[in-house]
Length: 296
Ligand SMILES: [Zn+2]
Image 1 (cartoon, helix red, strand yellow):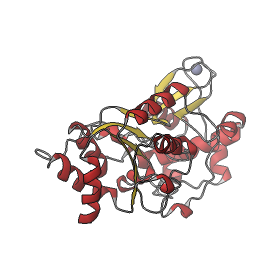
Image 2 (cartoon, rainbow, N blue to C red; image 1 turned 90 degrees about the horizontal axis):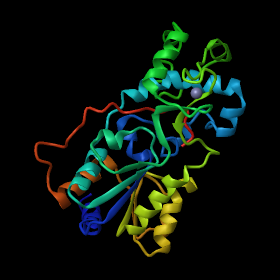
Image 3 (tube, helix red, strand yellow; image 1 turned 180 degrees about the horizontal axis):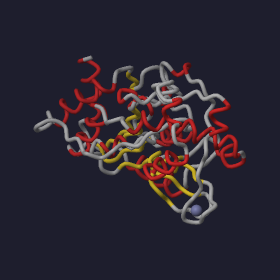
Image 4 (cartoon, rainbow, N blue to C red; image 1 turned 30 degrees about the vertical axis):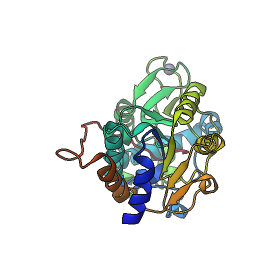
């Protein structure tokens, strides 16, 4: 571990670091990483944008499962890895964070300048009128529309990846937008088959191009949505360091790859480079968002 920290600290100490984080950073917060070491356990095919928008029955199933999974995720809190990233930012070594995670945990850990590439699961958007509301508000409405539903099927899958039989799904009542009255509601996250808004992508490319070092944390770089930043950095001669449990699709472009627990490695890295936190890492009171059944 010491040698690993030394190698990483030597690269990070120069500053100008941009972090690209993925699901592996949030597993220690209890949020399952479907593509990580235990990814084979995934039971459900990810929802695509096309299915979500085109199939009312699929939407009903999505919201029924998501309604239960939300409980698990809404309880999740930032872990030592998130807090260490925030400390590296405050210490001036990390300029910005691009995250593929939709759980809001970087922000909850006190990180400024976070680009949430795939959106946030604690926000809901109307596909009809574009009105945005909070997941908390939707959660309240879904509870009202489905009394007793939670009690019947909760505790089935503690990781939030809920199995529901067809009868339960058929009984579940979805709700529509209260602003326009008819619009379909969708979590404000990027599903498979959906593109990340262009201005958001441009902002990320701009961050990467200014970076001295791109540090990938807990992403297998399976989807091009994140991998393209590694490709861009490599093309520009910006060194890429990847810390992930298991191989990634960006390893061939990396100056250094490390297989380590982020919750242990990152605090050690922050201690080494910006010093121990005064009075402990800052934890904000922000409530994290959650995820289940989300594409990526
Ligand atoms: Zn609407």
